[in-house]
Amino acid sequence: STQPDFLTVSDLHAGYGQARVLQGLDFSVARGEVCAILGPNGAGKTTTLRALCGMVRGRGSITLNGTQLLGRSPEQAARAGVAHVPEGRGTFNELTVEENLRIGAHVRTGLGRRGRAARAAVAADLERIYGHFPKLRQRSRQAAGSLSGGEQQMLAIGRALMLRPSLLLLDEPSLGLAPLVTRELFEIVRAVNEEERTTVIVVEQNAQLALDIAHRAHVLEAGRLVLSGPARQIREDGQVAEVYLGVS
Ligand code: ATP
Image (tube, rainbow, N blue to C red; front, side):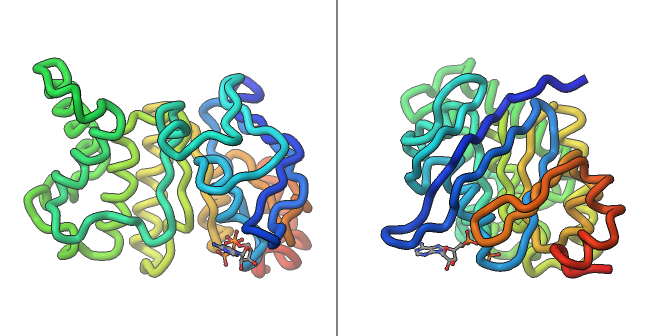
């Protein structure tokens, strides 16, 4: 049902100055898929997402729908349909929930477009986001800083979705959240993927949870992919789980 090669990463090398982190990654993600990137601390998971959204330079190739993303700025990547929710969320504490969401819309529409049609589009997007995250609607006039950790993560994802991205990048969404909250969050991500056909790449320490919503998974170790396959297969492979994912 899904088309192959919506996103294609080929021989991707990236790092920070002299520090070479990614040492030749090859993987592809089909349109509409949820892809999990797993692996130990320092493996390069975050760096992979940063390369996809223009935050780190690299060599090799990253194509989205045939368009080269490598070498683009974060703004250009966003315009190409890539939305990034970094670890730590990056929402504005002093602004209300709704103000944070409207900032997400500005990235898409540009500050110059304030016509009636643009306002209607933003209103429709807010409804869409509140539909996915009823808790954000309840707290729309509350300062983001007063939200719980789980609600702040919902807000960060909601803000990214205001972009109407074709590719959503989530970095450790479960960080610091209670298991029940994380499960609720992941169920919403699954619903967004199913209802909006948004392609999702999620980086997670919590491999079990990520594998529950992912279609495919890749295991990174020291900047290289050591394993790729259907999430079900990776979840059910006991040895894999023990060796790479720290579970058994
Ligand atoms: P974690 O779960 O710990 O975030 P990760 O798999 O996401 O792990 P990365 O964050 O991609 O790993 O980091 C890979 C390597 O790059 C690590 O050795 C890290 O110290 C290094 N690194 C990350 N960010 C920077 C930076 N801004 N400058 C220099 N080195 C960095």
